[in-house]
Image (cartoon, rainbow, N blue to C red; front, side, top):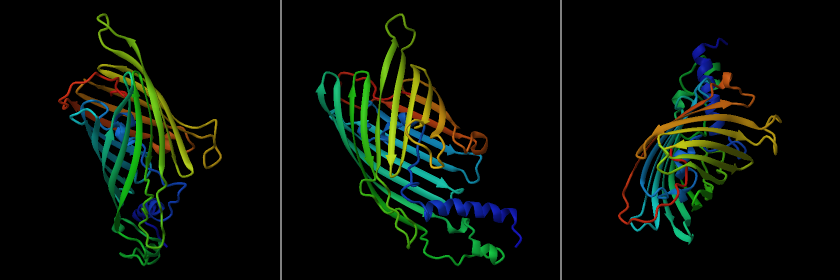
Length: 341
């Protein structure tokens, strides 16, 4: 059999896509992870909805492992704002992910509500709910199956049992505590464990994604002698979904007009990767700039696992954020519950 370059590329696409469509188990089915999740914190916890005391619109774009064929890309848009009575907030999330040059697509829209109550001086607790709808589809015309190659690049496949698309509901919850100088939260997504499989012959129920996250803001320079506010922010995010868990920890040097940050991803001391190697995933560098109205951020992930940066090309991510005042009732300002970049 003579394999053309086009056949090899399309076969690689098919293998990548079918891995997600048919053969994804609870050990590998993972949600898309953004390095700059602090720029859109409602993506990991609905308790952040309205916590910034301003309306906030954020977009994130991620290109993962850019050197690999048919790279994985994701787009995320988040909007949230406080309620007029300042007793909580609402938010909406819109996300879109593509694998295999768009052969496999997944889109989600989710609505969030957070209620806020005071438990101490400048200390607030914000329980929240999230409900959404997910649409998942695969473009079979972009895939080439083995039986097509055997039949001399036949235009159609004899494979059956694969649906071109499906929709399902997705539920989540979260709680966030915000105080002066620190924040701590926990969330759970996919509470209803929806069946996300595109196969009529295989059920793939999403594992619940649990997340614990928090951080602290340490002021370095304030007052009339300071030309700009300077803070050091230390933050973390631990995520567990099925048999896979992930730990991110990082620090930022946060100024009014610029943010520099570095993040580490992996759990090298407590566990090993699937191939029994040391569990080190990535080292990320973040740069952001802007004003108290808009911010732009860029991050690059250096792959530390056996995949390697030279093979994978690393991962690029871009964030855009715009914030504006909407609340009618003035309240005592709280410390921002995330790094503002």
